[in-house]
Picture 1: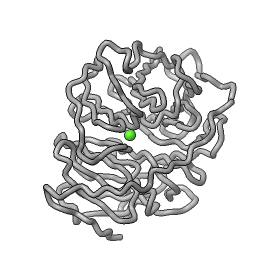
Picture 2: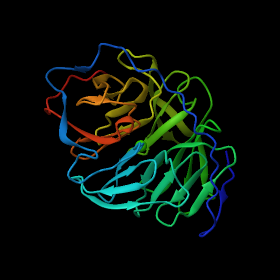
Picture 3: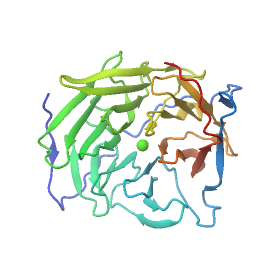
Length: 321
Ligand SMILES: [Ca+2]
């Protein structure tokens, strides 16, 4: 299926509608669960958190996405800025994109370009170049693969799409609205892996976490799970997903104020976090990323901070097939 791209050239004004800001969120969970781990493997918080009390003074305001960039840096999008940090948290730069506030998600291309989405548009970083828009779109997630294809979750039109950053006339629809695996209902965060599988989370319906794989005839549902709720392997308005080099899936279970980790097949490995501002607590965390050392970076949105967590051991846990 071909889609129409409203593509404009460099220098056009950014026209950003203020629509699409309402977000459904679950109530804070009253679940007694605070942490669950198999065996003796747990996630340990790396101190200090990146917040305003840190020596580097990370004055984040509602950080909503964090990525491990292809340039090796950590990039954070908050309500005003896109921040570029090194792995130790030192602030290397802070970009104000003119007219572009409340960025929902960011991604970095193989050439180092940062793409940011906010409701109805996708833009280049730095010069604020207006890159793509659609009147009915509400972009809620963005990813870029090694071949410079840009993937978008569009909650307005209820679809996942991708297009080539090198030739935007090349585009494809990956999924459309539905209730089963391989369909979307209010999709949010999206990411890809080295095999070009596509992972996304969604707020609506069921199957809140999904993996799709490319095939000769299009994208096929591969792994999908998750009902709404606050039990293990249930979700409340999850906003982001990350995948590591071994295919483990990490979900920002935003409305439950926790992180859940799954095997490549969807078996629950670990869940941790509950509502609050202390250690091992989050308030509506909206973004998650994982680096090559398996350190998790979590945009703890409601606490205005970025948290890092590391696995306490490398002990193997028997796989759930
Ligand atoms: Ca993300």
